[in-house]
Amino acid sequence: MRQFGLVIALMAGAAGSASAQLAVQVPTEKLLVLAMTAGPGDSALSIALADAVRDRIGQLAKYKVLVITKAKLCEALTASGFPCDVLLDDQQARQLARFLSVSAYTTGSLTRRDATVVANVRVIDISSSGMPAGFSIANPGTTAAFAEAIAQRFNTIIRASEQVRECTSSRQRGAFPRALSSAQKALTIDSTSAGAWLCIATVYEAQRMPVDSSIAASTRALKGDPCNSAAWENIARGWQQKNDSLKSVEAFIQQLECEPRNSNRRMQIAQLLRQMKRFQPAADLLDAGLKLVPGDQQMLDLKVRICIEASLWKCAVNGLAEQLAHDSALGKDTTFLNTAIGAAQSAPDTQALLRFTEVAVRNYPTSIRFLKARGLHVLIANVLMRQNAGDYPHVRALAAELGVECTIDPTITPKMDGDTSILNLRIGEPELLRVYMDKSLLGDPANEPPPPTDDEMLDARPCSAGHTACYISPYGDVFPCVQFPLPTGNLRAQRFSDVWHGSPQMNEVREIRMRDLPTCSTCSFMTTCTRCPGLAYMEGNMKGPSSADCEKSMVRARGQAAGKDVA
Image (cartoon, rainbow, N blue to C red; front, side, top):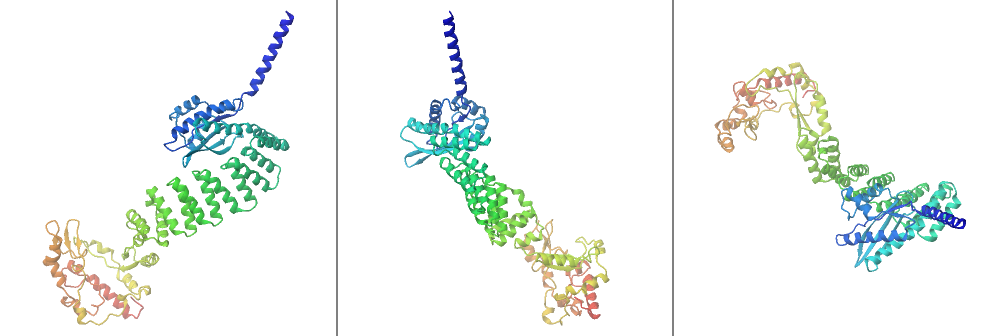
């Protein structure tokens, strides 16, 4: 019985030891194998290949990595609203991997080279799994053989990753020789292990070795994972430490080519190029990003700033046009409109200028700047009144700044209905005299000494009213001028051409010449007087004088008689 008991005890001890060993061998690293993106004709192959690779890795590396099963994968996809067999893009794959809390996951694409299908595989390391990798394998013939080749490569990477994790752990503890030893063991298993070379690079950095050592190790990491972001980052930062901005930016651009939709990284690189005064490459880089992510507001803003700073006006116009196309609210932003119009004028780009000014004038129909930019003839008519009699110099200065004409007119007329209360706004004689004696108005034809009266002047028309223009009221009434309330017809009852050509009143106005004005034709100020026949009409006789205009002529004459520099 004792011997039996001893045997039982020994068996129990052996069983306990075996259980302990099995507990140690339970893998802690989780790997998510996903189908690679593919064209419509190869999507089924991609899914079948992922399933086969997943199963085969589970056999080859059973005690080294925990592969997420197809059932677990389907459960997560279904919970997220995806079908079980789906090809995820990079962002979706990353989100799923984090949701499943895996250590690493696969992504990639199936492409065709002539008749051969090639698997371009990447292993993305999430939590220091030591498995970052990138490789390509051509289909050797069958799906099974294809899956076997991929799984065998995965198995090598997984085996090496144990030593890579040991390297990382030793480095964190400051045991640098042990870390380097572990990295060398990993490289013995997989000579291109990106994780091993990255660990070596960090050891070199911790040992404060020359930056060239870290650059060299990171460059070797790229052989095992050409798109490894950490490796490219190390290389770029290394060249920055060596004050070689050009090579640093080149490394960042190589990094970006592996993540072309990473808009933040793209803008950071563009800013570096901007600091180096390499404006055109910066704009080209942003243009490439905008093709992938059209309308990205931050990239567009940066592109416009860079192009304007470098006076790349065509580039700026294109960027501004894109901004407006994707954000119509900018059409009401005067700062944006002024910038866009200025860029189009500087380019010069007539089509863009018309497009920008059309939007500007539509939203700001009274803006002198926008009207002028649109190519319209703009004139500021400053009517002098008691309230603003002293402001006209500022109005003239504004007109000069805007590059438009400006007229100063002290004439206040009665309303069309004959109401004369508005005439109380007229400036008094002293204010009027000061205007006509203002030296800044000298040079205007109206301020020169009156020329002598001759037959040509006597045969001239008193005004253009009814000759080259007319006024149509909101009710369809037709008048010779907005200040000439003589009814000549109504468009509700007549055609305009009949009124324009056949109205007796309109023809009467057209027949009048200066010699037909009994009072004005004999006045010494006839050639410089600004007589308005409409005002004369409202005073009772369209062939008579206008008292307001007579007053202005007399004040002008008083200033000249006083020997002043007057208008």
